[in-house]
Amino acid sequence: MIKKTRLIVAVIFIAVSMPLLAWGFLPPRRETVSTPLAMPAGMPSLPEARTLAFTFSPVTRLGDSQVAELNLSADDSLDIPNVYEEYNVFVEARLDLEGGEARPAELVGTALTEGGAPTFYWEVTQRDAGTARGTLWLYLRFVPKAGGEEIRQPVSAQLVEVRSRSMLGRTGSEARVGGVVGGIVGCILLILAARGRSKSQ
Image (cartoon, rainbow, N blue to C red; front, side, top):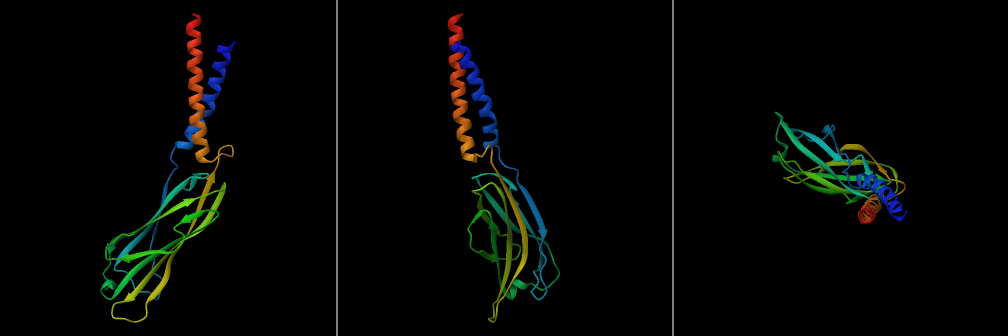
């Protein structure tokens, strides 16, 4: 009777652990949203066509962090005056997220060079299950090399939506720990049940 009970309990532990392990360890799907950069009126034009590519996981596990990445790539050159000869150009970005935490929270920036492809990274975490919505801001700043007033404007405001899900109310780390512990306990009980059966034969 004890051997049969051990076997049943072992199967239950393993059956419960497997979904927890799969849900807790499988990497979330990532997607890339690409948008051509359109320069607003009144700003100097860049001498190359550029594309914004934002890569992130639209659905994550509760409590887990993900790395969101923004890349500003340079595509085809345009037959227009080279603005980099007259200006020092800087690109700045900020990810505002309501319902989630994006680090760094402040504006981050770097110099933009001809043909350069700057990339920005954020660590995004949601402490509560549900949807976090926000805006990914991109600014360009033109500082005249000969002196004078700089030009700074937002050139992109992209809406961002990230959903955080739990499994039976558990966070990703809780599911992983529960799955590992449950799997170990189930395997131990399964071994004990098998040994007990072999001894009785």
